[in-house]
Image (cartoon, rainbow, N blue to C red; front, side, top):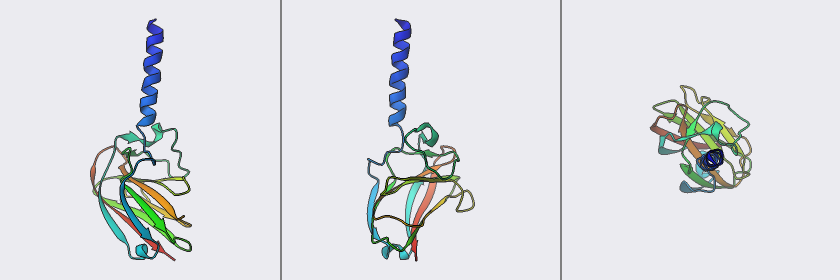
Length: 156
């Protein structure tokens, strides 16, 4: 009986862990923008950090960077993008700590970065961004929290 109870507790614990991951079905602070709107960089203040370790989340397997990162469950931001054809979209963070960036695109692709913006800050460049929803999480490498600025800018 004890083994059965222990197995049940482990099973329930694993379900809880799966739920404690970044979830693109939730909404972040919402904005609408066209590629032309973002041709002049737009900045958004945010507190970087979170409680969910990215590599404990089996449904998130970005094909990009492999560094550590802790993120909240709900995205920090949800952008509804339109008229993106012919543009590149640069998503970057400047922060007071070692920040990390996680995004989920309209085509349901995950991207992660840790340090490509220099000075321990992340940057992701989408060369062919799709119209639709873009969810953005600003986390940290070590699970701490700090002030940060998320920037979005398009280029032809």
